[in-house]
Image 1 (cartoon, rainbow, N blue to C red):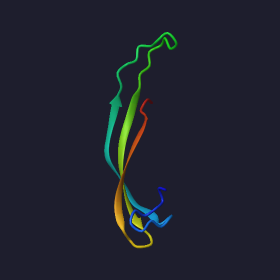
Image 2: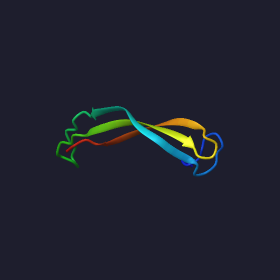
Image 3: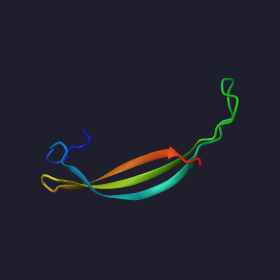
Length: 76
């Protein structure tokens, strides 16, 4: 369960104190020329953002950092 404190394991005590962008980049996949079932070219460009979530336990005050990698379509 994502809402547990890693130290006391109590549910719903995790509190995100601060979020910070650690790294962001654009990943460009090689151009796909198509196949018989998909004859048109496809370009896939993904933006990759790495976030640091600084968390604290509301029960005991234990602090830790979680890193989340988020990928999304970067086409406008």
